[in-house]
Image (cartoon, rainbow, N blue to C red; front, side, top):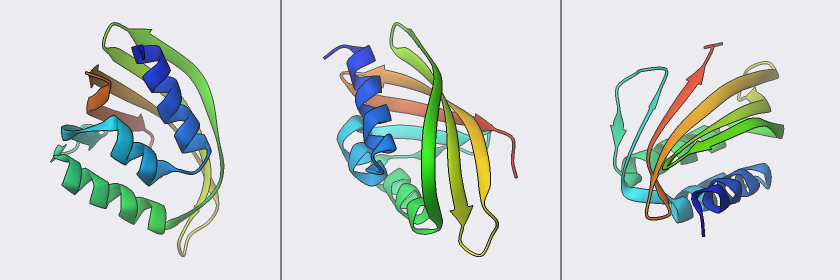
Length: 116
């Protein structure tokens, strides 16, 4: 599969609501993730737990994908999520996920968004 195919598979899995399953399949054991320049989360186990906690604490109503840009081993995906955090108000969060891919898996991902 090409990088474009892998990126599309992650998009498709996320749109189906299979966030944890998609993460387990397409993210490397040594993946490094961060949000808005915060401290890096290092390793698949740490990031998988973060993803599970995130999914458990929001109700998703839908998602949309905007532009997707791919350049070599890098991809940027615009997302728009319609969700309600537990105990919170329904909101729309727009973000860009910037990914670095190696051997068909994400090895680095940084999310950029306006904090709510």
